[in-house]
Image (cartoon, rainbow, N blue to C red; front, side, top):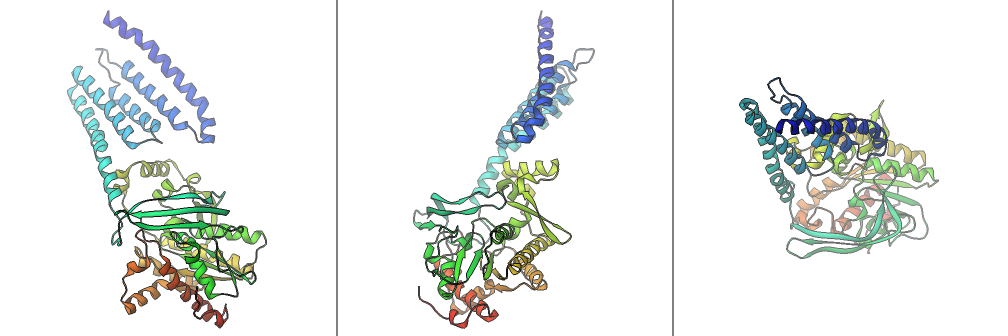
Length: 464
């Protein structure tokens, strides 16, 4: 009687498999075009096929030969089903498949195969247990040499940035937002208001009504994270350049690729600035090279490749992943702290420096084609992770004849002469504070004066 019941289940399982695969074949082309549920449909089909092997593939003696291949297919299917979900869910499902296969094999007398299946299940259980530990260590750890108070919560009320069809983002004209951040001890690190003017520039209160325009580009250091409008580098520099009109187009998380795309668009619209300043920090190398973790966390960033020595825009990072192996790597980096730990930290390569230098050259070319000056400014940072790479980038820029200012070296000299702690110029999260902007702006103005790009009357002291 039990035998008849088992036989009655098989047609139902066979029907399940027969339905799953034609359904997957019909839906996958449409789903892949829209990037929705394609992997889940294929994953369910693989789980169904694995279950069918478990039931159907038997020897003449009645023992199942499908447990191990079935468990492999079900594991792969569960990976695809949980591809956009927690890595823990996949580990738990895979462990369950292999442990059930082990129990069934041992019951049938296949002890060696059962032990092998149990060992695989134990590996997935170990991954399930290790993943939260890796996440905790990743969350509690900080960058080597980090200084300043530990940071607590923060937030942003309002909107000052919107997505961009090519670049990482752009400032929202007439946008306004209140930003705040607290230290771990509950004290306020900053509580400020960001305002964007009608030109799509972070507000520069000291900007006069007339004069040649200068465009400032960069990331959060340029935008002025944690600073009032009056405290940004742009406004402090504007006080040193009263005859010019400065526009702060810094967008948080942006890099040289974003600057090139945005500048091309502005020049294409007919704008003709007298000068273009790009403010660089070391992390812009990573934002340009786009290692797997950057793609996993910020796939909306633009991707460029060097072709015949020139940077060519390919599209957004998550839409230009090459090959299934790279896609799987990016997926695991996004979902698993343990995998990220095993993969190790990313380090800049010679190719990444070549790409940044080529982008800087392209920015300079766009500016000069519009009759504009271009200055590449190395901004000081509290944690310099790759100083030798920054030096290599300076050499490449010099070889291209690009004007640069190494204010990182000026900051080192200032700290040595003044005896002040480096922390006096940074917030706890590493962003520059108002004292930093007031210190750096005169260096930039003085260098522009040395280059002969602004008059000597603009490089002296100015009160806010």
